[in-house]
Image (tube, rainbow, N blue to C red; front, side):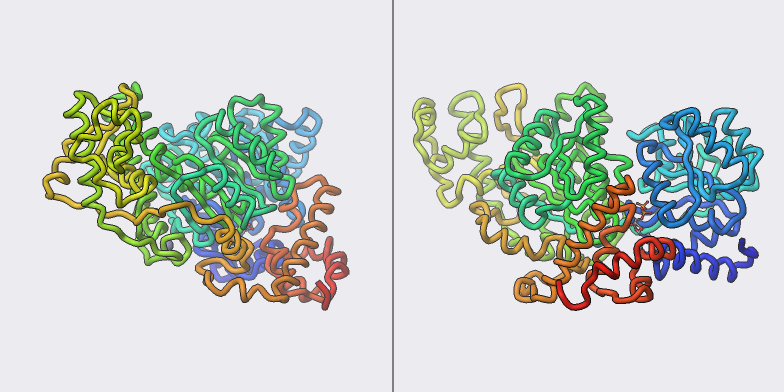
Length: 633
Ligand code: ADP
Ligand code: ZN
């Protein structure tokens, strides 16, 4: 199709972007990647989830002669991907084990005739001699290797078949290959290059920032109600994922949310596979389903309109946290990543490491990863800067995280921390054994419960020296001490608090402790609701939208946009149902929102909305124009 001249490639690529996909311009490095691959070069693309990887191979496949072969491990999603392409008027097909013999034969005939522009294939299918021969008789435009980190034996998504994909290079040395992944670290990158023989590929590394995701980490005090405030408030009716650490917790939270009137479903490895896929299908195909899940629910969930990801338990590492929260807002619309964490999370995670059967080296690495996660949770600086710094990127405060929007008060907690440490020390000295958090705090606050009297702890010099702080505040101080390794917890002995080597420095005045000033009591429900209604993902703009005057700005104009958006969503629901595809295959939220805001009255105006390509304009244009009342809501 293209003449191969760079300027011509650029022009044709832009034309395809406009006409087929309905987008006005390329995003980030897309244009360079498309040009490079369309011109016959190999590429390794590292781009965060939602960055727009698909276009990087779809457009070159359309520009080059022959079939673009896409290798993907995500069988469950191939059908949706192919349907989405067909909706755009692209000839696409897939081959995997979910097809019956008859259907597979039909696809093979189409391939033999060179019909599809894009063919999605599962790796195990591709590697069969039948498939390799079939492709050997066809003209191939390119090979795209999606989720390329699956070659990594160290990663948790390892797929042994991926190791054999180097065969593509041996058999088709002239055909360009593009490997794509959202996994950023250097080790994985090296493995991809080596295992897939991509030594001469050009690397395209994007920023891993996800500016449309708002990060928020709160102190856990009443997790269920905090979650309900979050999910049922600003995010009411939206699709989201709630991650919990255990299956039992998943079941409990899913039941509880359902009882509160929220469309919540559980997902974990303990459910039979029929239930799991039924729940996954509902999550993908219905609007506003909340999936409560363990991390078993994850890779390949490329539903674009996940509006929030909530963590009720702290992940073990920043990588895990970033990957999980990254499932929010792939469509670029505002989304929120929210986590509640508290003392128990810190203790629990440390315990998992201490008690694991792994060797010392592994424990050390796990400990360091946990420390980074804790530092993120406790930081009073910009969350996004912390996150990106972890992945080696630098930047300025983002304006779209809790700490930027509502800066926490720094607090010199050295004195309280010393009191706490002395109290732990005195108690052990007096009794010959240690006590847990609850007891130590009771003594500090000078409460004379039965246990305190029984052990004579009301006679200690540290009894009642901590009346200035509430119990919640003391727990926050303790959490900080444990997070920083200044106190440890003896898991073998009733979670007793123990001083560490590092405690001494603090007791001796050689170091200080600063932290965020803890909130004395949970924020009031009503206050949060009102604010949430504004600063949730319903706000029309991404990034650091102001938080103070939003409620006033929520004028009738916004209400009209909102009302039309809702009507468009119900139209989409009905249309998707009738066609048997997920709603986002018909149009993404971002496109519906664009339509609601612009209120186009002609096909030409509608075509100007991002995400409305030629084919969709044909299929739905008239219907949509009829649906949009130029004046009314
Ligand atoms: P990834 O595979 O990197 O997670 P996708 O390819 O699914 O990301 O793209 C994420 C979202 O961004 C999709 O909704 C897609 O339609 C949209 N998108 C991608 N490129 C562009 C672009 N140039 N302009 C507008 N939207 C885009
Ligand atoms: Zn920030």
